[in-house]
Length: 302
Ligand code: SF4
Image 1 (cartoon, rainbow, N blue to C red):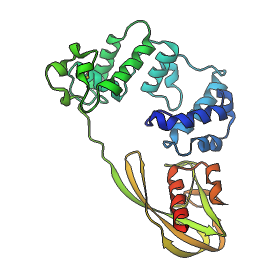
Image 2: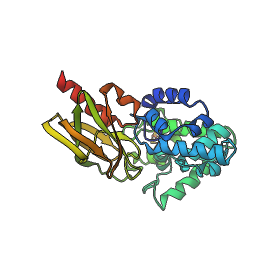
Image 3: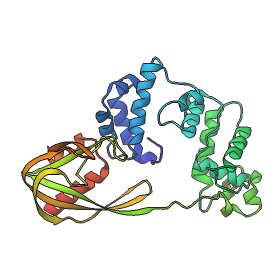
Image 4: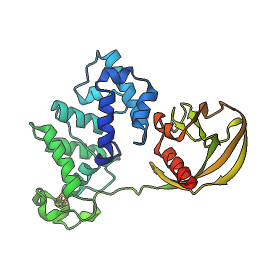
């Protein structure tokens, strides 16, 4: 859950998730729909799908036993180098360094290493330096200390060098060149404009389930394309909703329609439909974008 998401946003989801799925077997047994519903609003839904797949592999192929090494962990869906090293070192004391954005920043500054930490030739060089620096005991504590040093002291802008415990080893500090490291590529944020149909039928709304292709796989949403088989009356455009997903800034305009007649027919990208009361939205796996759409409608109706 913590991949790409802040701790304070994760805590309530984490607690509820553990109540719903108290162990790996209950998670493996659950339907994907139930797992996605528990994840609704947290974003990056591939994490939930991967967690579910990984639980099934642990139960069905590993006899319910969680892998205890970074190498074994990397075989599970959704676990890359960073997560594998974090789990292996913190939970199982394996001597493997964790390299996240915070640690990249600390190491590139300490050694004054230019280049993109996520790419060759710097990536393997940093991994080697990180391993050389590791103590032989309390490796989980050490990795957490390095991540905290980056998160709390060696900040991207205005690092707190005056209180930094490694200041005397820091080449970037000595050369007064801190702002040069790390060399990061600018993230390109795309602006996109979407529409969604809010189709009202006696106080209920049409919700559509996406297929397993591309984005929002198997999630439910207010339809964002045309739905075959329906006769509708267009009412009006509601105020636009703003939302950010990964590298996209979305402006979505909900279009309000009244249902007249017909039956929605499954067609790409939708495989199923339901008419739901506004209060039922939370029972379906949906992204928070759909909650914002509904909130806009409820505001408009007031
Ligand atoms: Fe970061 Fe400053 Fe510490 Fe160097 S001295 S590691 S730049 S906080």
